[in-house]
Image (cartoon, rainbow, N blue to C red; front, top):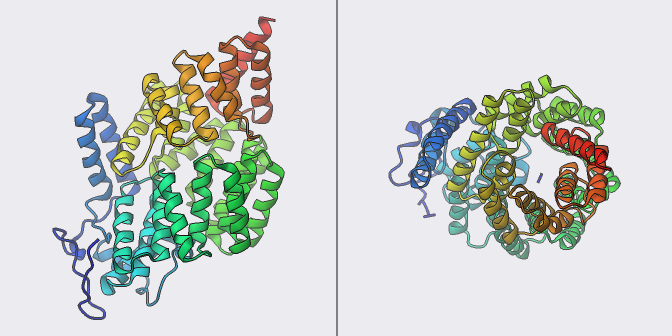
Length: 489
């Protein structure tokens, strides 16, 4: 969707002293390509299968180094800086920067803070840009660099709202939503019109399961800073309450107001995801096509297109597209989706490789300070250790009680053979009006296992009616369960 010590200035145009122990900026190793990061992840996954415990934790640290190639806090190298656009000559808005080319923005900011190391606004913008880049390239080790840049900004100007808003985005990206809410509130005390803080506050309330408060926060944000970031969050809050019609209308409004390719790609993808979730695959594919026409490298649009292709019966096209996505950004969602497509066509060895990469990514994410319990629970329940799935699901539920954590806990309990205990959580996951075929499928399977056949038929039928291709394996299981229920009548 819904992310230090002061250096003394040595004179205008001169480079800041690099962090202690780091090589000069021009000698900093180049960050690896996306393919290099994925290769490092594969090597770690292979090592992880051979050992656990402390060995795995130490491997995660080494993997983080491999993923970043030893980049220092201000990142980049001399060659990247030389290719950057001219240095930032005034205060830079992170909200403006991240709507353009993130890599160019980061390089420009890195050059600028070397030359002007006491520019607290540039440090805040750099921190926020690193958060956004981590979200797009699947490299959570960037969060450490973001944290350092934001801390540098606050050391230079304590309490500045740009850095506090950046800290809110960083905490949200790490799934520490209580901290994200605290940082956002502090930023808004300083600047009630901070778009980033307003958006992070909505995100935090949603992810804490405080939906009524999130709706109020979205209404406040819409009054203060109407625009694409607020519109998309407002739409999601409405969708969570089952109001798909309003969500669709607001997203179309956001698309009409999109000012540049990045905004068009973002909103068109959100529309595609909404329509795909309602089983309207042709419409979803048109939205993804529009997103990719604006930015042909936009990974969320590629992932959405692949999922819509799979749901619409084009499994080969979906696999090809998802292979492109995970080659550049090995995040749990697309990895699991690709693994299930491989499994559906009978290629279990390739499927297992994707699931192993999920384990590797979660280890790296933990090393970067990310709470990955929800990701772990969902992946492990279907493709891993059910005991680990249940542990992770309980931990996620204890921290934030949302429809998603309720669904994850329900499914983990069911997979552990505790379907009667799972049922209240499955009901809670569907209680807000939010319509998700996977949630309905989980509820139906749990009801069937608990002996509530009539309710199970209703839930499974609703899942397949809403989104008949919601998952290659899940939809097949739902249809088989319905056949069993009909045969038993």
